Each structure stands twice: as C-alpha cells, then as structure tokens.
Image (cartoon, rainbow, N blue to C red; front, side, top):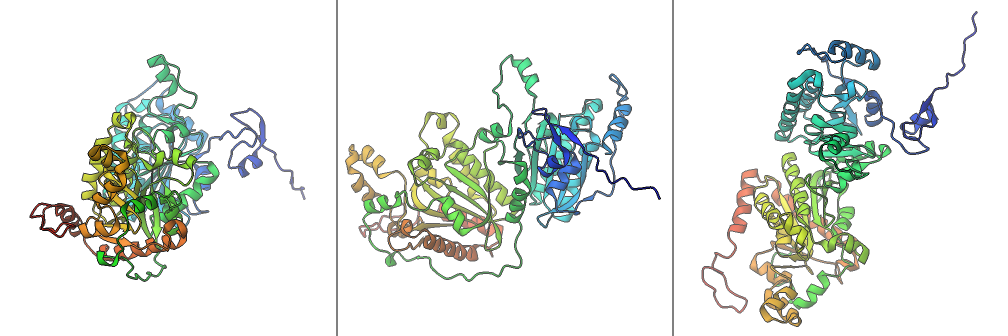
Length: 565
C-alpha cells in the first residue's frame, strides 16, 4: 500500500501594505487583515460571502449572466480574450456573485463584486446580475445587500456599460417604491459608474475601514486640477466626516453591524404586545402653576437625560445612521433605526451632553443645516419602510453661525417643516428639555407633540426676547413668564397634546424611571395612531397645525381674544 502523505502544504501571503510574509491560515483567521500593519487584503467575492452571510445559506441566482462583445472591441488584445482570461483566473462568469442568503437569520438578496475580474468593472453582465438580484428582493420582499469593489465602467462595452448606471439605479428605485430596504457596503476600491449609481443610491451606505470611494480617482483629479490632494482623500473616514456614508466599520464588525441593522427593520412576531397604561396628562388643570424661569433652569440642567440616554433605555437594536449625503454629519442631531416593543421604528433627536467636552462636541445641541438634512433623510427612509418616527427635541435653537447661513440654514428648516407635514407614517415628538424656536419645530411637525413636565417650548429664548423687547437681558425671567412656555400653559394653548410626568425632582434625578415614563407615553400614543390609515394621518396632522391661531380663544387673563388669536 502506498503511504499517504499527510504533510500540510504551508502557504504564505505577502501583505500588500508592509510587504511581510504572513502565514495564510493565520491571516484567514484574522479575516485577511494583516496583524503586523492592519492593512486590509482584498477579498474574493466568495470570501466576502463567507464572512458576511450565515454558514451555507448562500444560494446563487438560477441563471448565470455572461458578457458579450457587442462592440467588437480590441485594445492590446480582443475583449473576448480578456473575458476568457478573467474567467479562467477567477472561476467566475463575471465580476459579481449574486443570489440569496441569510444574515443573522434574516433573508436577504445579495450581490458581491470581485475586483479580480477586470477590476470589478461595470459591464452589461454585472449590471444585469445586480438588477436581477434587486428584482429577486422585490419578489421575495426581502432587503437587498450590494457589496461593491470596482474601478468603474467597463470601457470595452462602451455606452452599454454607461447605461448600466441607469438600469441598476432604476432597480434600486423600484425597491424604494416598494418599501424595501437596500444596503450598500463599500469596499476598496469603489469608483466611477459604480460609485455614482448603486453604491451610493441605496438607503443605507456603510463603508469598510480603509475603503476608498469617489467618482474620479485621485490620479485623474490631480492631473486635471493640478492640485495636491489630502492624505485621507476619498477614504472611508473622509467620507464619514463629509456626510456621504452612514457608518464606517472594521471588517470584524461588519457582520454584527449588518445583523443589528436588519433586526432593527424586521418585526419580532413572537414578542407579545405590551399593555398601554394611560399616563399622559391631557388636562391643564392637573398640572401645577410652576414659575417659568425656574422651569427654564430645570429644562437646561445638563444632568437631564439626552436623546442617546433615552435611546439606550427605551429602544432595542439601535443603529445610528450618519450624514446628509451632501456635506457633512452634524453631531447635534442623532438619527437611526431601532425596535420598540418588537416593532421597527426610526429615532431622531437633538443631542447635547452632560459635560463641557460633550456639549462642545455636540455644539450644545444646536444643529447646522446638515443636521436637519440628515434628520429628513432618515424620516424619508422611515416613510418608505412604513415605520413610525419618534423625535426628541432638546435644543436652544438652530446654530446662528456664518457657516450655517452659507449652507442654507433657513432652507433646511423650511424643508423639514413642509416634508414632515406629509409623512405617510405616524410621527411622535417628545420635548425633553428646551424646545427652541424653528430649530425645535424642524423636528416637531408631528401627529402627537408630548412635553415632559419640566420642559419648555418657545418661539425664542427668554434672554433673546428680553434683549429685543425690553432692551435688557436681565429681564429674561419676566420674558419667560410672559411667553407662556411651561407645560400647563402650552397644554392650555394646544401647542402640545399631552404632558409626560417626571420623577420626583425631575428626569435628572431618576433617568431610568424617566425613560420608563417616556416609553409608556410612546406606547399610548402609538396605540392611538397605528390604526389610522395614511390619508387620515396626514390630513389630521395638517388640520392640527392649520388650526393654530384661527379659532375662538380666551386669553390667560380670561378675556375673549376674538377669531384670530
């Protein structure tokens, strides 16, 4: 009998970053991230599927799509020969693997590009495969995940390649119209026609650490404009800072992050419906007559829970989304998707902080235009997915700075107001601290506006009012009283629909109890709003705001004010 050779063949791989030789099995265990320098080695499509999807869950599409030489194109060699060589080298029909799988048990349609196949270029076969994957998601009513790795359009297919940008974008648009989630995972590199189509027009865009993405490559840009580019230009971190991606994640974090995102938009049918105790105060007579200036001080207490504090205590599976996809990511507004009592929900809110460092980093809760545009982007996503929206308001007002004005502060607030009016999904606002002017209203055009008992809501800060009308900032306490900004007064005016009680001493003295009260208030409000159809929701919301100031009312001094308040 011939003896069996059990000697293991040891494979070594040279790191593309530090050029050191790495033991292949060790590198694989590290998800092909170099343990010496941290460089991400490029993955094949199959390796990427193995890392991201549940074991043995991937099923390829039934039909394989192959490219054809429609132009009879030849450069240094005929296009058919290039295709044959790429197919032999990769074992793939073209630059994408497409099919269905599960991630964390949630079914998805998935298409993964492979840079080894002619630089992952976008040709007709790639465009067709990605379109068919989106159509599979439509038929099966599942989310879509596209993993990109591409140098851009396939020049050997001329304008037929260019048309794939429109074809794939149209497929993503159909998913949006059907209320289905699309996710793009950017890997290194993603350029050209891929970057300017399905890589960035998905609902959620996440980038792997170290990935680069842009329409034109750095060399083309430098040769065209004759300028030196920043070192971090077009990197994942650059994209996050400039509002173009929702998140950047280390390769080890990608699957858990995707699982959390998919959980956030997938209802939990096994979770029983909670009871909805009536805790909201709707009668002003049940509220005390607190001094307005003292309430302002309480509302501004830095120890009061922030939006992120409520998110951590009230919601499950929260996934924060970043950026306005145009300029930047405003830290004064947080937005994302979560689950509440087992149901998907969108959460958006002003974010301050508890320390000086946090307050400065969050711009004291004063958003810039990109903050409102980020909020609106997530609201639109929630509307497409058919999930309710909860907004938390706690801001002195919109940021009054030169850069904010340059980037269209007024227009950003105005756009939020008009768009929120017509959102086809329940919208609930909770004013947790300061409700300052248009900066607050931009997140508060809602079906239900709830106010915490020690929160305030005003057209202007007391200090601003006293400086303008009294000519004396010291008159701020009197201005606060005249503006009628406390819970009892706002409920009397109908500006808020109900008041949420606070623990003894205020939310800052028992954040956990405060979160429980907010959760109960949300349950009560959602139970009222969820049964309503879209047309009723929108019309009732419009009528709510239409009615302010036109009905017969009695002033706080008891005298009738006539038809117009």
